[in-house]
Length: 264
Image (cartoon, rainbow, N blue to C red; front, top):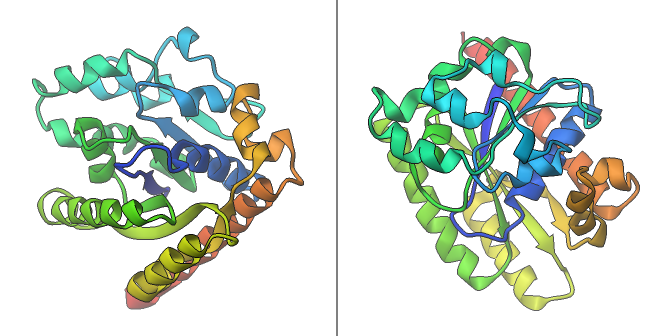
């Protein structure tokens, strides 16, 4: 059964989509079965996976509104080695249409039930805002990965996001938890970066991934080629960092599964 993870931050420009695409590619490189679902109307994760968002026949819009099932929306056989349910501007209309639909917060969760056993990980990319698309992602997920820059205002933003996760946990999804906090665009030469990083570790402990994602030109260039960094330049610092993150996530997931089995 797939582990469903939402990658989100209500603050834009923190490497959310970069993380979703590159983590998907890195997990796939370690022989995990991965599905990436783009829930952002901008469709950046779709394009960054080598899929033209303008040519989608079925997308996350049809999935959420019930016009197509998940199997019909999945794009397989891509050079990135993971599957994709893409998004484009049509998804903006879904936010309005969902308001009229029954169980509107659970549309994604219901849609994924029939395909969850086909994957090891399902990664959800989200818009940088708290709307019904993000709520659907959180209601369907077991965990949240929060990418964030180590800067002062990021600490305020993460407090708000954690409050949102706690509310979703109480009202819609008791399984939801913070899976991990990922430090992105990391520059150890800056004293503020080191200070904020230290505060994060002090406060969140092992919820902060050991892996940090450095500022890296290859990570920034790869999306314009429709590729994850791993396929654009596999030896870049960014590629190696996301491979390390995939390993860290996989080990933690396996440990959690063993712990759950022993508890049963």
